[in-house]
Image (cartoon, rainbow, N blue to C red; front, side):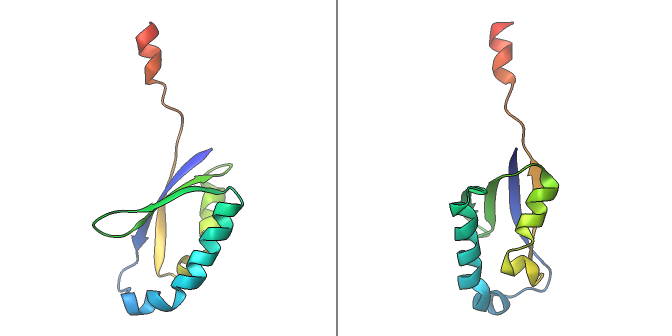
Length: 95
């Protein structure tokens, strides 16, 4: 199942708190990309928050995987997780 995960910075978090963990964070994200769990990752233009597409069994598995990220472990960021289903609107073209 495709899962959409959107990063949210937790209240009171500063760039100074995040910066020391960024290399470790990138390494973990790279591992998840290489394993096929993270299919896409981008940042929002204005807020520079991560937007991730994961391939998981369900939202609980996605949450468990995202909880392994260093910034999540340290409670500096969290994610809004939304399971996705295929678009079925094309059916209307053939009814």
